[in-house]
Image (cartoon, rainbow, N blue to C red; front, side):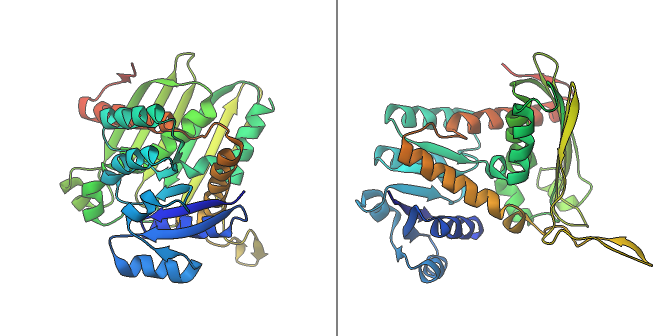
Length: 330
């Protein structure tokens, strides 16, 4: 079976998914839609698909699934439209910036018996998957503490910051999902601190650029998250899981994994410069997982419920910073 795709949104992340879909032997990119014709034309030219309107993709009989890469404030509406149209849906995170709106959207998906996957691509990174497998195989005993470091090489434009929903909903949300993925229990309490250390314009826009979070589960397990919008040395992505009988970690990745030793000391190549290169395999793996779930009629994960859970944690982190205290999750 070949799953036929429509791509909604031809921007930076749309290009990443267009490549992943087109490279999969079990998929075909049939059409792309974007508000900017030049962006859609570029993908159509690169991958041999058609440029269509969203309405045409919605009604198309030659499209089985869609990948939603449009602005965040369109996600929930498009998910509902395509669920009602009977298409399987892959949507970039977040579903929406409002918990209540996400709940309403998920209800529509459930009522229409729709298929929805939310794009938490880091679950599909080979290195992070290997960490999870080590946990599942019992190699470190019971998970006790998770430490996640995620630092961008540079801050996005302030115009993006203003519409992003803030660092906790835009950036840390990936780490909230990864913490849930590795802890094996749901967090029940959140403590967060935040500061503006990178760019004062970010603070003037009402956001932060440097944050730390502690998540706690009912049994006492903890996840510690460190985020910054600035890492002068590259895209910093590390995970460590400490257990009752050992520890497993995933180090930073480089485009080339070599080490040179000479009279000047030991040197290694630079880290990946951002997510497009660091998580290439993760994007391919998540699309492959989505396709396999469609073909087999299997449960799709990460689901809308996973997207909701991560957003709830993000909202709690925002509240914790504002009130300066631990926030319990209902």
